[in-house]
Length: 143
Image (cartoon, rainbow, N blue to C red; front, side, top):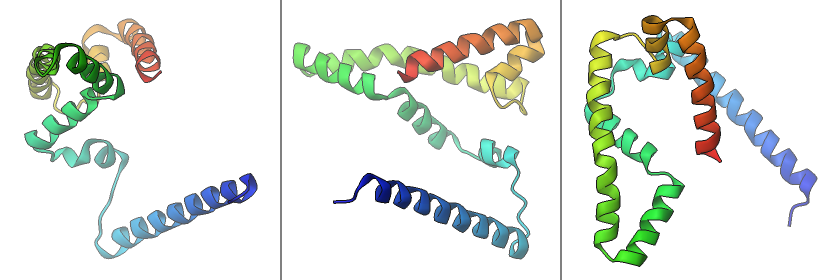
């Protein structure tokens, strides 16, 4: 069994090794394939994702630990129909979100987040309020 020092050293060593490996791959792609990867390309995947992958991403984002636990509890309490009715409650939100996302992509094709849309539409004060609200939502949702 490893002692704590060895395991920390192993984690840090493998992390540094992985970082060096990824830097080498990036350098090779830039030099031999003439690929220029910017942070824009990284965060938006080159804006080349199709609707199937986006839909699966939205579904996997929605299905987090609390959802899995609650659907199991509902199945235990109400039987097979419990998870069906539990999931049907989220379909309305997903359909509305998909419609809103399509409209946002039409009106602001270069926006990365909805906060950029809020800042452009409503100004910096509302943008600041939304930033605080989103931080609280992330803290509460992540805990």
